[in-house]
Image 1 (tube, one colour):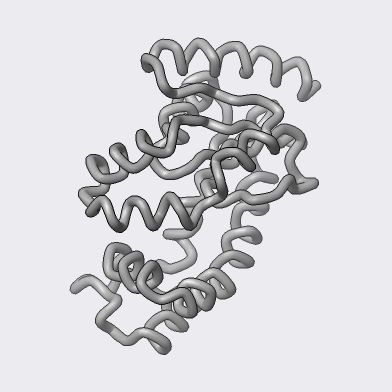
Image 2 (cartoon, helix red, strand yellow; image 1 turned 180 degrees about the vertical axis):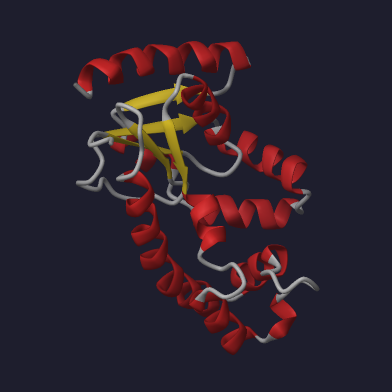
Amino acid sequence: MSSWFVVLTGGIGSGKSLAAGFFKARGITIVEQDDVSREIVEPGEPALDRIIERFGEAMLNKDGTLNRQAMRERIFANADDKLWLERLTHPLIGQRTMMHMHTAASRYAIVVNPLLRTRQPQYDRFVVVDVPVHTQIERAMTRDKMTKELATKMVASQTDRDLRRRLADDIINNEGSIQAVEAQVDRLHRRYLVMAC
């Protein structure tokens, strides 16, 4: 069971999943808060029921799952709706994440948290995957097929790049090649294995 935890963060399109995949390939348990955020709104979960109560069944796909695209568009068009959703989901995501962290089998575990705005005491190390804002916007538009306007709003709503960099213990620069990212991950992994003893 792990008792040493790393949080890996970065804005949309920064390459968090790429970096996390390299840690995972080295045998490290990865807890993706994006995955946890999906778990807590699966059919039958109380959070999904609350979302339907507030926004109606228009937020559902035909199979009864949350229509994440419709929800995303709604909350980025209305600040009150975004705040309501965050107040509902963030505590639930935190609780479920802690559960996953404490069942990790590797020497250390990594939590991928795209929304982290402050250092938190449960994490021993704070790692940022970093790219320029224009790269984030381009990647979000390509990967998620979103408009430039929505991608720009999403980037603006996340933690400021400079703040993330100031909070970081370690920075993974993702402006270069995939191999360069893997080399940075490998160096950090070797360091974390020593630190987690």
